[in-house]
Image 1 (cartoon, protein in one colour):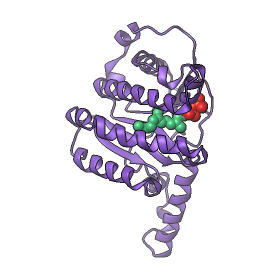
Image 2 (cartoon, helix red, strand yellow):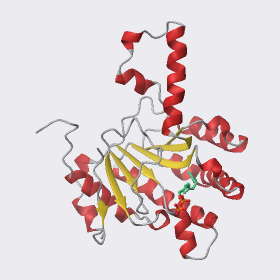
Image 3 (cartoon, protein in one colour):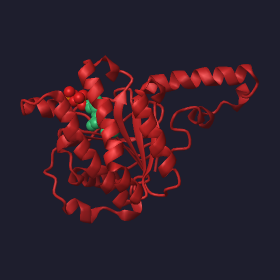
Image 4 (cartoon, protein in one colour):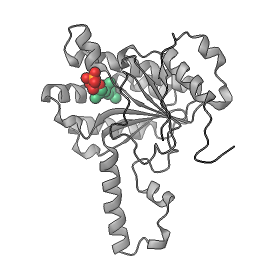
Length: 254
Ligand code: FPP
């Protein structure tokens, strides 16, 4: 079961001082929600909400890198998001390209590795080309691994894994007795990554939305009413601080 925590306390940056730097979560995953509502509250088109959301990405990536977080997975485009109006979908693709172009130097000079999960073969060619360049140029960096979930869906990931396992079984590259939880993990897009320690969901919704379904088995949940464009590093600090107070038993007892 996820542990839901709803942040109501006013957040101040004094939380930063209390963070235990020896217990920084290794993997933070974020469902970047609330861009549309943020825009609506300001009588702006939804796409402006996404644009404002990119500003938050910049700040949060920087702060995760400063804090020594190893993996940051951002849910940027789900397998279901193709169903949005075509103008919104094309803006999201454009924002991805702009982000990779505008931020590349800064990310690379800060030692960030750019990676992704999801089926990127369905993304426009321009997005794939920018992503390939970014992967290639940052692959030897040793800082934060910025993992963008693009055309990602947890069910799609598991379905794809089943298909690959079936083929490997058929051609005897895999034996039934070798199928363990670790083997299954190795067939997922997140192969080699630790499971997320904490999943942050701004904007108040309390659901997983097809995100990291297998990997979130024991992730701590942190939910806040704040919408993604208003999410600041102070909220990240508060989430980390709350995470550090959780009692993680992984189904066992202490
Ligand atoms: C959810 O908010 C957000 C998304 C589906 C897209 C998130 C993408 C970005 C912030 C920018 C593009 C990504 C990169 C990596 C540059 P919503 O639109 O569902 O909000 P709502 O629930 O308030 O309508």
